[in-house]
Amino acid sequence: MDNSYKKLLDGNRRFALSKIFDDPEYFKKLSLGQKPDYLWIGCSDSRVPANEVTSTESGEIFVHRNIANLVIHTDANLLSVLEYAVKYIGVKHIIVCGHYGCGGVKAAMSRKYHGFVDNWLCNIKDVYNKHCNELDAIANEDKRLDRLTELNVMEQVRNLAKTTIVQEAWQARPLHLHGWVYGINSGLVTDLCVIHNEAEDIETIYRFEHK
Ligand code: CO
Image (cartoon, rainbow, N blue to C red; front, side, top):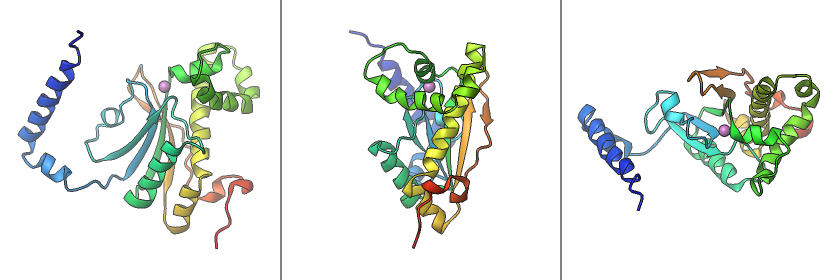
């Protein structure tokens, strides 16, 4: 039997001990509840852990991750996380964080068949198709992949702005949407500056009328 999983349990003991060493009340305070200001929608990729790359602690970021950080309007999982974070926790910022070198984006850019996951990745093909004039003009494949990664993040931020959940929140209070890309080879986040703060930032057809 492969015992490599034990490393995780050992690591957990070290984690718990070191936190208590620094602050004996650490877990007691966390157990009282959570009030994170941020919702992070990131890729499942093992190299982009939300807390680690932002130097934040437990309790600071509410996290949803899936392959290629997609915001799909029929994804009950994403919508449940989004509603809970916005309506009940009251997060102030939602960050869609993609990353360069994303396997999901790369797979979507090719015509290779992978199976079921291609249905999920089809959403990225739609992003490619929408921006095909710009993308097809980029001869270098790596650069084209980087640009599709950025455009994918921007489209997912727009998808957030189209949801009833975000638009309802905007009726009542400020809620900021951000699009970031993380560089696995640099450890640095680039802010794509696609901040959406209000429904006016998206096309009319997506804006719901409110009573
Ligand atoms: Co990825």
